Amino acid sequence: MAAFLSYLRLPFLASSAIAALGSGLLYVKQNELIYPRNLPPGARTDEGVQRPSAFGISDYEDLRIPTPDGEFLSAFFIRPSNKGLAKKLTILMFHGNAGNIGHRIPIAKVLEENIGCNVLMLEYRGYGLSTGDPNEAGINIDAQTALDYIRQQKETQGGQIIVFGQSLGGAVAIQLVAKNQEAGDVVGLVLENTFTSIRDMIPK
Image 1 (cartoon, rainbow, N blue to C red):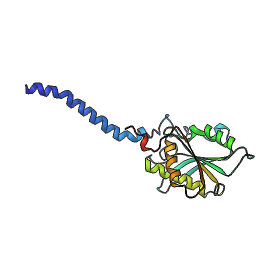
Image 2 (tube, one colour; image 1 turned 60 degrees about the horizontal axis):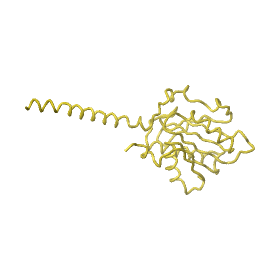
Image 3 (cartoon, rainbow, N blue to C red; image 1 turned 30 degrees about the vertical axis):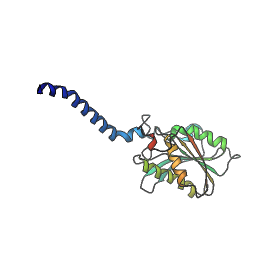
């Protein structure tokens, strides 16, 4: 009888072990699930990051912006091509949780051509050509670093800022705008297919 009961326990123990292993792997890999920075393949290589020039944009800067905690963030600063429409307005753009800023250049082009604004496209830490590894606290530092960059540059200093976030970037944008209302330079928040916070992206 004891041998029979032991036999019955084997499937239970095996399934428990598999469940524990699965939970452990999920915990270890949760950052990869929330921040799939290597998708599509090649997204973190120089060849995998398209430049604005590939889309007919000539007036731009390819930046590396330092963060207070020692990372370097890749970014594109795109100026309006239609100087007749140009105004002292900058859109700070945060992309979704996969790919890199190169994949969103067509959106930035529509914005600069039709609104006549500057567009700062920020690459989070661990994405594209930025250094480091992504995490919630770090990405919030990146967002503040980008906003401070706009505020400190001569050509954008004193101008109006609109923060635009897609998916993951929307959660980042909400946090950033909530912390930076007193200065009065952030005049708009645009969200596309987003979450209220990075934590809300995690399945319960």
